[in-house]
Image 1 (cartoon, rainbow, N blue to C red):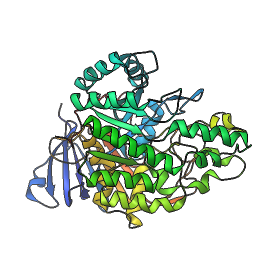
Image 2: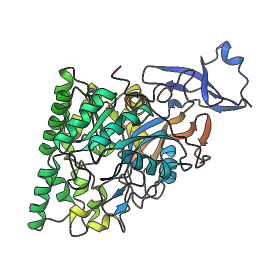
Image 3: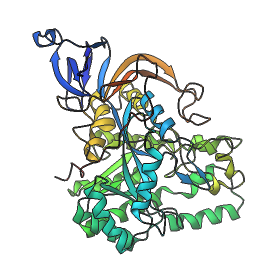
Image 4: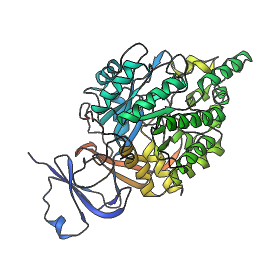
Length: 467
């Protein structure tokens, strides 16, 4: 039976334009748009009408970097696919791309199957997977081709974490050469992990064990050096490159220089690098452990370069790298040794609101907000135009956003399964009011109406910036 929903009276904002338009949804997809008060809209006979007067109507957010239930440092990320996707929906995100992990000695297929099992029938919103390559050899290189064919079209490698995820330059080059042939996109965690491990060992030997030393040993220059090296390896391989969680001015400069040469090099940053800093890592009484992530938070002066990179399109995407660990019992594993603090921050619920605050603060425009949070991640990872925009035929993933409501972010009120907020007490202007995923109400006027299992796995095409 056909169901029709009309979203009426809002300002429709996409990456390309803003228009006062009514949006008709039919059977989970956008059926039509018409200007307010036009004769076309008068002929529509909806089953449900949503009044969006005075509100924004934007595409559902696409968070292309999450880690639900990730094993790390002897524990697991505290959000699973059920709690994490519910929290994402509360924050106006309607699609996540999570990372399936190949463990050393096992096949890519085993890793992908394990992540399908974690997510199946759990998700409140749609989801897709990237693949983490931990063991690059002839068989995993062949498997990359098969995964691209079935819609897992991006592969993450690590220059960090020796003994866990680390790949040396030879393995990275082989994977990049393969992706140049099969159309996949290599995603790189760019930090010089070998050098960082030396600095960690030396810091601990000096008795420097507090969380702030996590930031001090993971030096800006070692992020910039690894970013430079990844770019050169990609050039040698003739492959595109996407650098994840860029945090430092010097790393942005490496990306900008490559892009100025016309190279297919892309960069992502995250809200924590735009809004938090080493001041948080230095909070007393081990509170700084809440802010331990890698790449680490940087001194505040790096933020201006990140905002500038977002405005000049040297950075294209803002994702969360959502990887939460509770302060009690998880972050506390590193008391007396910062290197044992699980790396990761909660953030999937707050990305859209924090970036709207950036609009309010004058860092970016409304359309750029939608571009870096919805449209570009969808294009980058082969989900566009099904996701990331509002047009006839696209999935009806819509957010009714109130740009005037003032809210205070807090662990008391967030929906992520973690016992602290990285943004505790921060006041932001703007709030998600209603969320539809494929035409179904997931959040209805600040009430959760979604369900585990509504979200479906979504295969992806290859990166749409390389056609």
